[in-house]
Image 1 (cartoon, rainbow, N blue to C red):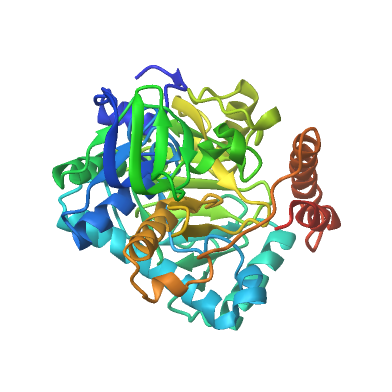
Image 2 (cartoon, rainbow, N blue to C red; image 1 turned 45 degrees about the vertical axis):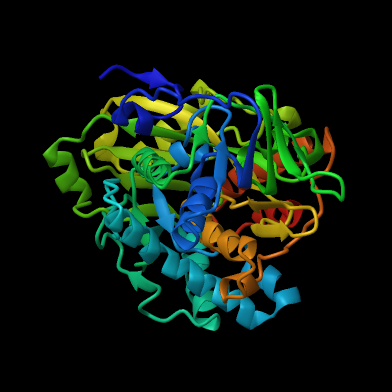
Length: 461
């Protein structure tokens, strides 16, 4: 298989060419109009139709279902809180933050349940996540993470220590943590299966349809999504655009479109897998500041990701997913550093995508019954699971059901906007330069570098 750079992602290359569906043709009316056919929009439509089959729901998508982060991510259905428990707890209370974390744990099970019930074959394996430490400073953060988890009520069943080399043999590992609240998935298979399921429930997905503006409800007219192909008026319009939100001028600084990049190898020979000793489908991460994430794919490859060049000036988005050679080289070198046996394994594909980062790194779900407008996102890289929980929460908010989900702390969570340029660009460049410098220095330090603490302060994490 020849090497490809961009073209959305390897995941879609594996599933086969995508032919976008028909675009919107003229004006339409709906009870709920959803802008964006990624995980958030599709899960919202799915759960609404399950709860109230007679609802008229329309989805509008600029490209095709799953074109954004939903079809490009690392394939982690991870049950980590999409934000900071401490930040939520400061204003909503500790119990609320704990409930959000438990809801995220349960969401992993929910996604597996729905995929099984709907016959969606997405290579889902509820295999758990391993996070390794490779020096004294990272080992210190491992210990702090475990202590923090215990303080917030995580048990040994939720998070536990592994011995170096246990389950996966990573070069230089000093220790690791394991959580079962994570599943491997082939992202494009999940999003395409979910789109097919939603269509079968009677929800049209109009692709190749760019929404230029979203209009709130007033005393004189309904809420609406306005496109060059026609306008959809609805009781509610839900914006589910995540990392592409910056394309709307009114929301240009709401969330930062953070770039994340991936490479995938050729299938590894059996002797390499034996040397790595990665026999299961556990997800793999690390305690570096400039961190990586990886999975063993169902067809025997390693899909490997990291931040690369994290931000483009002016919140620009490279929609095609083409990745700079510098980023590919860094990811390739990091993979070989972790697993020396992979050093000569050819790469098959490299790609990039964007995820949305709020100024306080905390995700949100909002619905305004007065304006008829709602949105969810800012998942900071945890969107495969968080989007499902957001979809169920939006369902309850839209149907005016008072449930445990509608009282979660991320509901009606508002944060300030990101700084204007050039401050935004300078801040992000400085932040990640500091993280890279901290990782370099920590090879000789017994504790987390002060440079990293400065980067955390700068970023607001």
